[in-house]
Image (cartoon, rainbow, N blue to C red; front, side):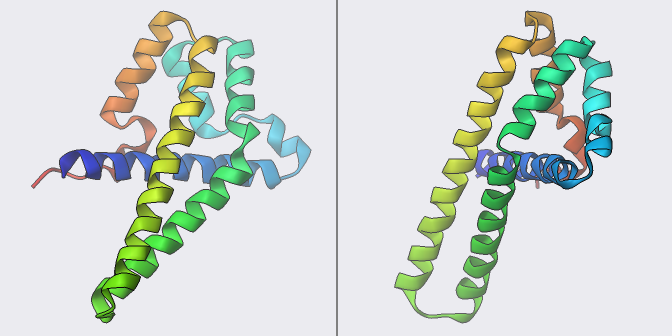
Length: 149
């Protein structure tokens, strides 16, 4: 159960970051040239070169629209599942929606893993280790983490 919560929290944190990146992608070209706040912080925390920072930016921009759309689908499916679970006695509909949420969550994990695999070759071994440590602590999305009860 804890692992599932951590997975969900990580997925939501990724989605929040992707949404931020996607919003920047829709802004004017002049605004897109300026690094986002999380990118600047990551550059500082990992000691990235300008070339590394640009390469990371490109990785995160590459599928930003698809990731944002996926996150919206997941969020909608979770909302519908909560509604069904609270208001419906139709076990088949609830199970179907639960299966959809699980499928979307699995896709989120696959997308996140794919992104990390693209990021890894850009970083030095020390930078990869630092990034892993930041992610374990919740990085810039730490506000989304909850204490275990």
